[in-house]
Amino acid sequence: MGVTNGNFETGDQGGWTTFVTSGRDLTMQVSETDKHGGQYSTLMGNVFTCDDSHPYEGGKAYIQQTISVPSTGSPVLTVWYNFTTYQQWDPWYGRGFSDYIRIWLDSVLVRMYANAKSSGCGSPQTTGWTPFTMNLAQAPTDYRGRDVVLRIESLHPCRFRPTIYFKPAWLYVDDISCA
Ligand SMILES: [Ca+2]
Image (cartoon, rainbow, N blue to C red):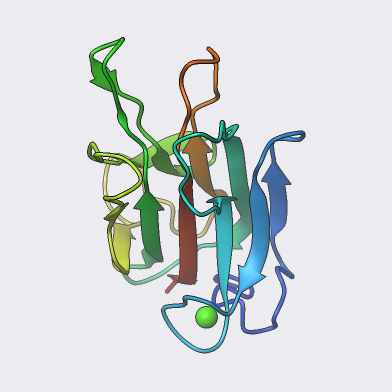
């Protein structure tokens, strides 16, 4: 029923399947450092002090679980997130390399948030704690009464040429509910 351990107050990621790209500088853990409520949140991404000379390697991290959407009423999916990035404009390509929060329901992307351009290590972009909400009874898909795979993902670009040093970016999530 609803979301299991959506607030991480068990002090672990019980109820969730976790994934991180292997061999990269990625973190996936519960954290007491920053949370929306209670004592714990989940932290994923590249968590470093920003250093212009260090080549961080990105990748993907996500938490996932199958949620049972209530069959009646107007159930709403809520995900609180706090996203910080130092990702930087790349003068070679003339564009920024974005970091992404992606929320999936049954392998359908229902929300993507990309960072705005940062000016590098001195100027992180942060969303602050922000709610994503989605009415699960609304067209085009009425999810009521269904078991749905919810995935919350932090996507960080990979370093693909040695002169580009990607900057750290990390995502806190907490108070994930479906009611
Ligand atoms: Ca919490």
